[in-house]
Image (cartoon, rainbow, N blue to C red; front, side, top):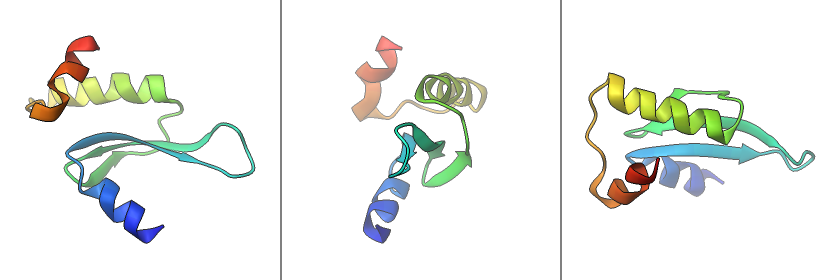
Length: 74
């Protein structure tokens, strides 16, 4: 589990979804930017994606080259 957490924190931008083994829904949906969780408990993946786009716009961040086409779809 620790290795997975370290791997996620190495990502430039990510919507992190943590599932609870007892429940079908996500236990936590967070936004990770440059290895730091900037927002926890987003509620759901759709809201987290919209908030991530807001962070990118408000903080004037560059899109990661590998995710160029993903953000064009949004």
